[in-house]
Length: 556
Image (cartoon, one colour):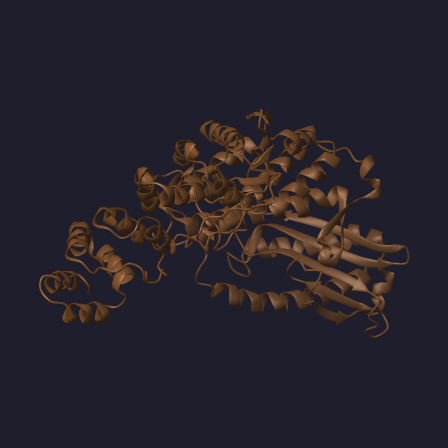
């Protein structure tokens, strides 16, 4: 081996091996590990630059993990005069093969432990030259580890993904599984290969919103990483602050875009769109720039499964199931226009249009109507249903929409995800519950399925309901349902006063068959603390005193 190459290799390896020894000890002490992580270290970067003088021959920087643009955690050593003799031919012919051999031997021997190296290991060397930066890359594949990784993945899919509930994967395993799905060494990068597995975990987590959100977030991140680190970088370059924007490369027109990869990128755009609709829109635009007719069709018309444009006598409308948006333009603020719009939207939902849609509403009227519920977002979707509810003749249509739209653990996209997010059907159901007793069954059904852990917009509904209908014995069943539909942070209802024997009797009757925690929830929402209920009982005379004491016995 060339003497200068040997010196360069020995200095770099001496630093690397010392760091690896320390890292090996740290990795061995990690207690929570995933069966899907073959190893931790998958990258080594070495760079020589004269921009930092060192001892006059520049500085060698070493990165054990892929560096971020905004951080600098490199290990450094001063280069010696040998560096001046290192040519590109010596790099490719001697230095890189020798470093690859040392790493391969360490991987094969398990020198740093079985979980130290991943099955795939990338070496990147950057050398500063007069004509610019030269980059050399090597990739090592441990075929035995790769085979074991595939076997572990298959076992994971069969035992944790495809098996029925209550079996679920660990959250740490889902982190790696999402990224393995986007690894061409492990899966074909085709929608038909991945979507059944992604959808299966979504289905399993449907009853657990936190786990569902966690899984959606994991695969969203994985698709974004694939899109930006493996696909877009070939045709676009990062621009703007922190590289958040993309600009088409000047030479991109000369590159041939693989049709299958472009289709998969369009699929990636749709998958990230669930959590990041703005990013979906950007990706689809990039796909159009690269010649994707499918992306252009999605932007313009949706998937084609639903009628994109509708021209009625009182409205103009459009629906796009890919962007999950419905556009409604009312020719006039009148019953006929709302009737036509409700019929159109309900028809879409009955055909399978996403219930978690966003509505864009245009009306010639400047008046904006909303329900008397402070916790509801003043979105265009809210405005639409508040406007439609003004016409009693539309109430049956609104009820039909509500029954089609309601879905547990789902959320409209009329606002950014957060405390204002509500279940599909919310504006219709809550509005109907205020205007007519006829729709109490729909209201009760809503309160039974609303996600009380992740939605609180319904917490103030009891007061609005009492103001609209009064507090009478025949209202008690639906009022109890409303109280039980509140979130854990819901406060006592000031207007809910049990001050007559009839009200007390109907409350006792409603709570008789309820579970202990449900009784406690209702009693807290009506009376506040147990001490307040006890105080009310002491002040009363028979028969109210006796009835309140019976309620008190249920309050722990």
